[in-house]
Image 1: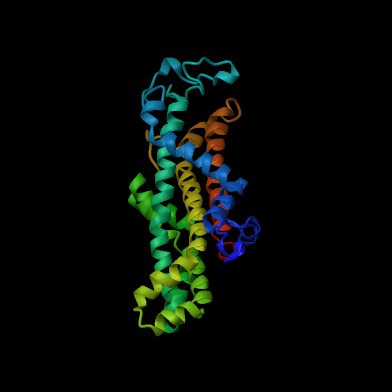
Image 2: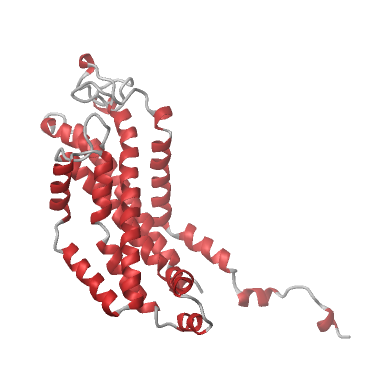
Length: 303
């Protein structure tokens, strides 16, 4: 028997031809995507801040002290007792920012989840079944698109009263249209593919086809819409709180902090700039993460 037959050591040239494994390629795409990594790191920091708020906040966010009101941040001549100053009621600004992260993240995640479940179910059903189902869903989408989100949210919250629960439910029931449109379009693109036809040919049930063949191939689009709507919900909550119809005082909310500081904007601009900057960073991080996940999970990158 020749040496070529008995030699079982791997050939380096063959390994170079075969290339890296799918797991190695996935890790390379994830860690090599700068926007994704920045978004994940920033969002992770904000989530940890929200979770450990009682340990990180230097003061009680609800404690008032008229003797300590309107103190400037430390970078404007303030003291380290209140690093970001105090508001018009003497409440520590840093503590309210930390606790406000809980409100924004909770509203964004829960509202986007509610709207995602509604919109995804409608969009997938319309794209897969077509016919009358598609016509009904398309009509509902057109009706929803004819309704301005902010005006409807303002009207409903004004009638029901502003609270955290009401804001979450209202936003969750108003932001499903983008999910429905994108999921319908994505389902229309994949329902005629060979793997779907093969699943039907071997006798798979409709729920099995939808969950095993359709959803995994449109999940990357769902991720992008989920992150966009999460950021959208956070901005809408801030707008409602700014107008006094969202989260009610004394609950810490970044939109409410901007609203409370707008009267002093010309004299103490930091009262508006600080919560506005944190809100901007949160929304930017969510969008960067969503865009990065879309790039990583795109079908053309899975080979």
